[in-house]
Length: 485
Image 1 (cartoon, helix red, strand yellow):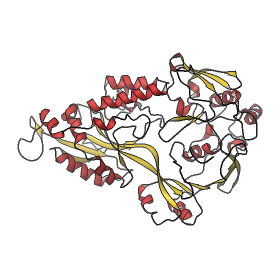
Image 2 (image 1 turned 180 degrees about the vertical axis):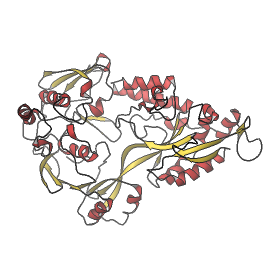
Image 3 (image 1 turned 90 degrees about the horizontal axis):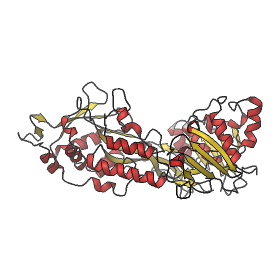
Image 4 (image 1 turned 60 degrees about the vertical axis):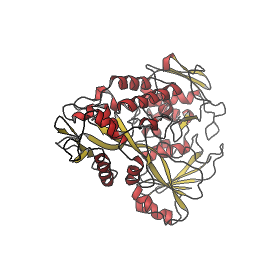
């Protein structure tokens, strides 16, 4: 199996991995306590199970975690994988002698002890919600690296960072030839094959390699590239979760935004006036799917999210006092026309056709769009973009907090709602997964009433996959999570 990546991994030690390619390859040879599937649901890997409040493995209000390892867990050289390896991983992440990319989340830990050979207790200073995506997403081999650290005083330059010949994943690093990394099946596992990772920086190079039968998987294609591979034999395009949701947002600043957007009825009417399937087909034909949640396609999306956008836009606008009194097709109130400045980012997905269609849809209910350039001096009222939460794949999205709504803050919509704030802080402090999911459901239900944002389309990542690679679902957070092994 040959994988073509756009850039070489800058390090095979996760402590030093800065590039997406490095983090992607990590999943081949290193296991974590658990892995997230493409819906962001965690599954035990090295851990014997998931921590929960019900069995006491989450305690102290989400501050203390008791983690039990699978007793049969081993390294690829046959050495047992134990609690000492978790403690060592923590120590290396926080050691000032190591110039690591990030010390999170280990710098939040106030205490960590080995209860026995296969059990660790971790205590945080505050309730810690993002454990599924951040806590021991990899474990380092103490018996390999501790002697080197003791001798050199740092892991910054150890050979294992480039040649991790001992691992815990389905594959084991076997060497490098030029820019090709080779991995073989872990002798203690049941992986299906050998893996070669090639670096082909240009999309055209990767597609040519597929046409020549030299590559089995190409990640993260732009839609226009995927549309150009219909003539390929022996390969198919597979959609994978990206976390991207194309969303319509509002300028809530009363000083710079249109006054109509201070009314919930107007914001809801805008959402109701839109034909999502048509917009999605224009945005990414055959790829984008209608979305009704910022967390569409994940376990955090409420099953009732789509029901929130039901009703009659014209009735809502009439009731809010916006009527077309002069017959020009544009509603007004107190002499102010319902003309909204509409901005989109200058880069990324091409939205020209979407802008035109959106204007037509809103014109049918008496709202006129005036396209503007994002960031221009004339300001904006509506904007459309697709982005993932800052900590993706963790769903926490602090961009909507009141604290970021001030001048220079990270919340350009200037949205500030105390009830939303309360729920966002609550989910960020809730370690019990099922309870946290319910909080996101409550956020979505409240958005149905107050309409802070209007999700439009779920945008997938596109992967080119060899036909022999059946039933795999790569996604950007963990591309190889369900590879056969």
